[in-house]
Image 1: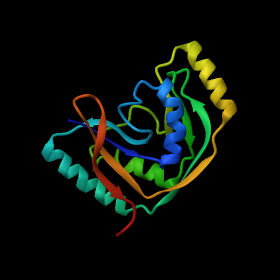
Image 2: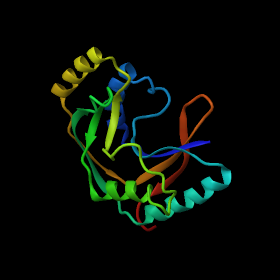
Image 3: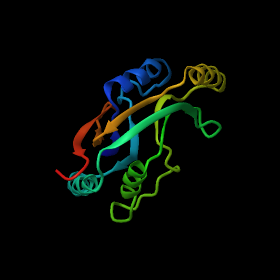
Image 4: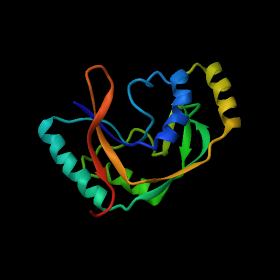
Length: 171
């Protein structure tokens, strides 16, 4: 089965992202707006229990932290993805690094970690240029406190749902 680890922002930030995702993101109906900490990976039932235990331990090592979204950006020319840029913090970097450490499963990420929330993807070059130009003028400036992350699994229809939620800090 496929799994991933994400942070879901607050409903107000999700609503802001979804205003664009409805139109410009073909994955809109499959997953709510999120910040990916660990991309898709496969695990069986016995492996995922061990992974969940490791994620529980990772969560205990981090206190809740401030998430700041401060601009609209793009991954072009690598791909035509437009996103809300999230300020990198020691907590975000640490969570990402811990989830890609040899003790976890040693799986190297495909790309360098750029904290973001996708608002548009799979656009043609012309569409990307138009949408990016208008979103960049609109701008974004948002802050909130993050106190949890989620292990998700993928259903047969391609949508994602929460397997387990991990609260940050020692409880």
